[in-house]
Image: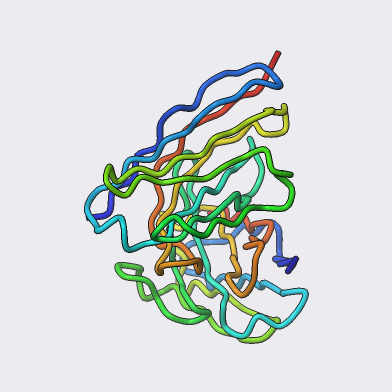
Length: 107
Length: 120
């Protein structure tokens, strides 16, 4: 099973600041890494697919990068509506797995 | 647009069974693989199972140990998850989600979820 380790677990950020979330895979997954945003009492929403491709309708302040075992989600200019938990997810091999999540709070 | 609505959740005693349903609309259901993903209270996301577009291939999380069965009826645009021998640790919100392809990959849309509580 591929284990995804996210860091940090929690981040408190002022609006307008940059947020960087890291996801490390226990083995190489090429670019089969995707990012989801989940707000309380809502289902996960796809933000970034295949490491760096923005999903339809996602604001341009969200971007992804990386390949192999290390990936990054960046939010450039955090907005209040971005308060949520962010998960990375790998589709390189079964069983599909998720990272533990990073909760982003607005200061 | 893609619309997925789960149903069938509820409160059930340990050892009992439950069948969850997911009604799909807004897309050609029979051409996409479908997943179930769950989230225990206050916890992260956990992948449960996937079924291919034609229903012939099914894959499960190892942790389920054969207790759950995924199925679909393409004539009714329905996805199902049969949960048997339920345990307290199966308590979670269960989401159905659409894959981007025909077998398994990542998911692009999900439903609002249906809650399952296993308690005596």
